[in-house]
Image (cartoon, rainbow, N blue to C red; front, side, top):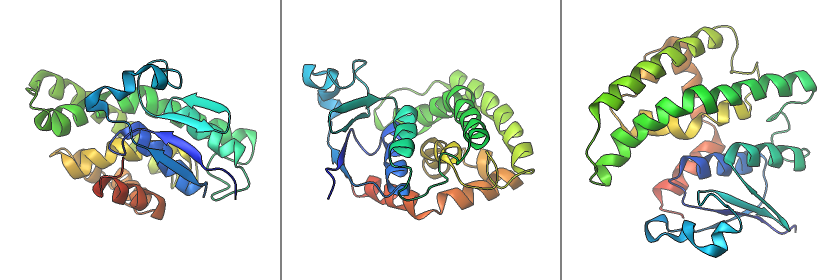
Amino acid sequence: MATPVKVYGPTMSTAVARVLACLVEKDVNFQLISIDMSKGEHKMPDFLKLQPFGQVPAFQDDNISLFESRSICRYICDKYADKGNKALYGTNPLSKASIDQWIEAEGQSFNPPSGALVFQLAFAPRMKIPQNEGLIKQNEAKLRKVLDIYEKRLGESRFLAGEDFSLADLSHLPNTQYLVAATDRGGLITSRKNVGRWWNEISSRDSWKKVVEMQKSGSN
């Protein structure tokens, strides 16, 4: 059996969850290595050799080290192209380009406002940090505009990049999960006909259910 790849970080991290979902979709054996960020383990010298910015996840595949969750996911799909979900990162240049453009949309347009809302609404109360109502209002307005574009797109195709579930959809799972399950702003997603239909479908995948179970069980 091949040596499992290693993922460093807590399952509650949206970026770590993104990589884990990709690994499960691709049926790649992995080892999850706990990093206690509350104790500053992500800033220790040994970890910084893997992730120079002191963030999670860090990723190792034999002698290869990578960071940044979306790049890790692309690598997994290319390296293990014949395993698991073979269409996850497209099967030709056009499908890959379509997937890439929606991954970029997620990273640049969806992630900033949704991530800000998740932090303010889900994490700040747990961390005993005062919520910033101005930031919440500002980022909710930004996210609505993004989701208006998604609503139109998902009225034209089953998934963001076409008729197959792909990394483009998978990349949205972690933040959207928190928005829907851990805040009072889930209606931003579920109230839209096409976005709601899409969310129900992608969040019902066995791969994502497994990641959510890992989060609930406290796997780190």
